[in-house]
Structures are given as C-alpha cells and as structure tokens.
Image 1 (cartoon, rainbow, N blue to C red):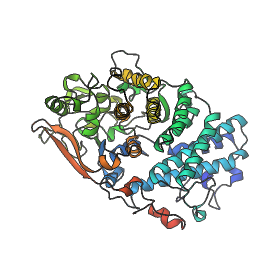
Image 2 (image 1 turned 60 degrees about the horizontal axis):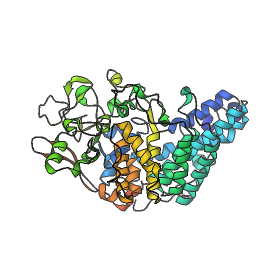
Image 3 (image 1 turned 135 degrees about the vertical axis):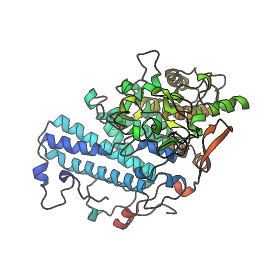
Image 4 (image 1 turned 135 degrees about the horizontal axis):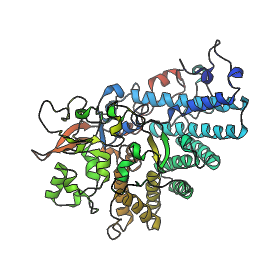
Length: 518
C-alpha cells in the first residue's frame, strides 16, 4: 500500500540483488531487529508522528508552522486527498502493517528461543492491530491487511467499520491474554497485556461499546501493575512532575515512546527563552480548569470570571493541573527573572502574540518542557501515549454512559485522580445524576489529558465536534481591554469527520474508494 523505496532489505525483499529471505531469516538477532522496525510507528509526542499536534485539530489548541505538517488546513476545511498529514499517517501505518506481516510470515524460520519467538509474534500482532486501529479512527472504512503485499499486488478493498473493529478486538484480546503484564525497566516500552486492553478500551469508547470498555478497563485495573504517579517530594506538583525527567520512570505509563518528546523545546517552548512555539492552547482548554474549591470559573460572578480570564491563575487559586499543562501570561518559566508577556508591545519581546516562533494565542503548552533540554533544545524525554489516568477516566465514563452512574467506582476513581492533582473530592451533593457526572468527567478528561492527543476523538464520540469546531477561536484576554484575542475562524462540515484517503493510494489501488465529499 505504500512506496517501498529505501526500505530495509529484510522487510521488503523486492529487489533481485538484495539478500534473500532464506539468508535473512536465520538468527534471533535478525528477528529482534525486524520486530524493532515494526515499533517504528509507535507515536511520538512532539516529533515523528506528532500526537500532541493533533490537539490543534480540536478545540484545545492552534497549530502554526507548515514545515512540521499543514495541520491548520484541516481546521479551515481545506484538507484534500493531497493533505500531507493524512498521507503520512496512512503511509506509515500500512508500512508498519506490512512489516508486521513480513515478520509473522518469516520469523518461524529463525533459529531462536521458542518462548521468545512466541512473545515477539504476539507483539507484532498487537502492533499490527494498533496500526489498523489508528487508520480506522482517522479514515473510517479501511482494508484489513494480514498478508504482505508489494505495491503491484495492492488491490485490497475497504472493509466495513464493523469488520475492522472485530478484527482489532479479536487480535488485541488474543495478544492481551498471553503477553507479559510488565517488563523490566529496560524493555518497559514494549507492548504488554495492559497495552492491549487499554487499546481495546479506547476503541470501545469511540464506538460506544460500553460493556466491552468496562471489561477491558477492569482487566487493566485488576492487573495491579499501574498506579497514578505521586511525587516523593510533598512540595512538588505530582501532575507536573509526571511530564519531566524527574517523573519519567513511573508506574502510570502503560505504553510510551522512548525519546518521544525529545523535540518539545522546538515545538512548545517560548521563543523569549530560546524555544519555538508551533502549538498554542486556546482559551477553551484554559477556561476548563476549576478553581481549587471545585467550581468552574463560569459558575462565578462576572467580575471573578473576568479576573480569571485576565490572570488565569488568579491568586494561585486554580486546579494545579493548569500550571502543569499550560504556561499563561505573567508566569515565570525556568528562569525566576523571566516573565511571559504575550501582550507587551515592545518590539524586543519575542513572546508577543503572533511573533514568529511565538504563541498564536497568548498561552503555551507546558507538558514535556524540561529545563534540562533548554541548552541543546533537544533531549530524550519519553512520551506517554497511554497512561493509567486515561484508563480510569474512560472506565468511569463507561459506567456513567452504561447507566451505572451510581457505581461507587465512579467517585472512587474520580477522587483518586483529583486527589493526585491537589483538588478537592467530588461534591456528591452537586454531582448526583448521570447528566451532572457526565459533564464532570468530560471536564476532568480535558483537565487531565489535554494535549495528549485524545481530545480530537473525544469531541467526535461525544457528538460535539460540529459545535466546538465551527466559528471563532480565542486565546488569552488582553488585560488592557478585557477582550479575548481572536485567533482564527474555523469551519467544520460532515465530511471532516473522516480524513481523505490519500491521492497516491487512490491512484495505485484500483479498488480503493474515496471518503464522501473528497
């Protein structure tokens, strides 16, 4: 399904002068190398697959900088079959699917430990299922590929959504039953049993299969492997620490990409302190954070609402996750003498709104920015693609949507998450119905998971995408005028629910069908 020029010879074997399969698939070392190449598509946060940049395709952030992908075309309804972001995702996923198929077709020829080989085959199957899942969520109906094909052999038709869902579910369940619950720290990045069930949970939530979601979540919870990260230093914001080197080795990560946020400093950091900013939070995500008393700022009077919009962390009285996730005007960052001033008209102020490599909104993403990366503007910080807090939130939401909102697990797990963040317990007198708990858990998801790539899918499965992705987008409020900064106009229509099938795939596969209205 993809162009294979330059691919590793042991993955393609499509050239007469390259090593043959019989020569390659012989040793354990070669098998390990081949499996490692299948992991190449595991998403990064700030580089490679740029999971965090998909926040800019939702209502929580704005993208700038075409050199890292023309993400902003999508928010204006201008994407088409030549859109680079869709092409990258499709191409990379089907390349990795082909690698997995090649591995599964040939690894039995290798002389190696049989137990290790069986585990590696399960890893390859689970990875193949994940790559199908990502394409399913972005593109809708896709071909199921379980046999390695050359471009000339590519005639696969799109399977139905139900067929793809069933294939992924079957594969992940089978792998989840047999893969290890955990690995040593050196290999903790591998697909585990918990990874499989967490992926099932994501998929089931998207398709509103709440019984399946609850079952998958319970398996992750019951494994006893994972827990929310809490700092050993009582004075430290545990949530903020989670996204730094100090909190990198934690029991909350279920699946992560090694060095996956190594480029965070040149994606999110303020220009005035040596960084580059290409993803900027909107006022939607900032306004979502409650006060420390557990109230939304919209529940306060008009004067208080304006005070919090001008100074989002007014009197240091917001959910501590705000300063762990977002940098706001007036905040000190890294250097105690350096204050972020997006509204300062001084021409020497590199952090002005709209300045090249500066914020587009007056806010900055704080997650995964660590002072250790400042000097070199790069690092080795891992990106947590799935973490335990997401599993707990999805489990709670599935209970609520499955009409089991009075289940004690709902409050138990919400309180665990809020307690870790430094927030008060759920006010049961206020949140005493399915409707009010639904609103609370949706707010908690954004407070806890902002910029981690899930908002794009959340607003689709909730049915709110057409509302939140149409119209004006705003950033920080100018203290001189009390008016929020208008950033852009957005346009969303029904066709935007799915991405376009890439033009190259349409031209190379005579049986491929395009998504509606592309």
